[in-house]
Structure formats: C-alpha cells, structure tokens
Length: 255
Image 1 (cartoon, rainbow, N blue to C red):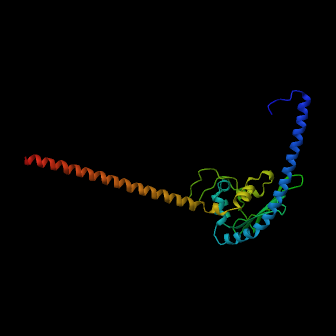
Image 2: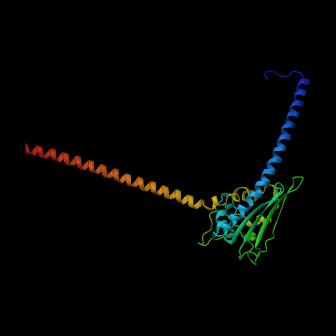
Image 3: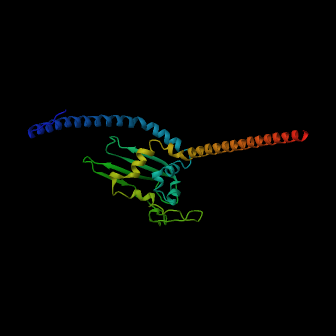
C-alpha cells in the first residue's frame, strides 16, 4: 500500500496472487452456500406442521385467499374482474419446496365446485436441473363450456354496468399455460417468497386502512371541536368588551 509496482513482471505476479486469494474466497462462499442450504432444508421440514395447522385455520375463513390476492399490489394487477369471481372458489393454497430446495417448488391451488372449470386442483411446478436450466409445467385447465377466461375480451362490464377505468389485464389463469420464461416467473416467486410465508398480512390490509381512516376522522372531529371552542372563547371576549364599553358610557351619562 502506498506504492505502485512498476515492472510488468511484478504486476503479473500480484495479479496471480490476487487470483489465488479470490479462489479462496470463492471456496469459502461455496462452503457457506452448502451449509446454508442444509440449514434451510432442516428448517423447511420443521415448518411443515405449522404450515399444515395454518392451512386448517385459514379454511375456516371465507374468501381468505381471494382477499389476500386482491390486496397484494403485484398480484391484484394481474387479476381481471372474472378472475376475481373464479378465485372466490379458491379454498386452499399450498407451496411445497422440493426436499433438496435448490431443485424447485410446486404451488397447488385447491378449488371448490365452480362454474368455470372441472379441476379440483390446479398446480404449477418449477424445476431447476443439474445444469441450472429452469423449466415449468402445470395442470391443464378443463374449462366448462363458454367459461374459458383466457379467451375473454380484454374489457368487460362490471356488475354496475360501467366499464373499468383501465383495460382488463390478461387473465390470471394464462399463468398456468405460460412456460416461456420459467427462470423469471414473477407471479410464482411472489406467491412463494412473499405471500406464502405470511398471507395474513395481506388479508388484513383493508382493516388496517380502516383503522387509519377512523383515526384521521377522530383527529378531524377533535380539530372541529377545538375550532368551535376557540370561536366560543372569541365570542365571549367580544361580549365582555361590549359590556365594558356600555358600562363606561353609562358612567359618562351619570356625570
């Protein structure tokens, strides 16, 4: 430090030493990755009973999953109006990471009897082979006659008879047929890494907003009362001043 190697030979030797040190760093990084993977595999197994218990409890709450998806900013952007209607029949979602974790995962969507398709379960799997090439496969959706949401027009009328302010997105269900870029499947990653670890936080979003709104209303009410009090005080002061002036006038008349 503090001086430069002037000859090319010295620079080359330094580069070789840097390369040796870098190899040691890379070796430690690989070792760390292997150990981290073992820890992830261990805790993935330990979490399973809790995921199962959570699923049993969620099943007692009507429309839990459709509410969760609608409240999630990224997922809601992918939902058309009829997608939401279909997702009201979604009773359970399960994310299963393959035992070694690094080779992929599967997302299962369990549906009650519904007017859209025959399937009870829709699944999509993501795989990473030994050479690191990603791929995906999914359940073929058996649509009922005239109910294929992936073939609907881009704009629909809602129940109130007015058009949505923006164009409807491509149907959520086209995701099950899209295998073009399995390595960058945004929806799959969002469900696995963001929603699945704690879906309750998105289910509860509206309640939190309502509480904030109520708090703002209370503040506005308090401010309104303060304004009334201030106006009352000002009126009282003016009355006192008027009484004082009247008193002075009366004294003058007596003189």
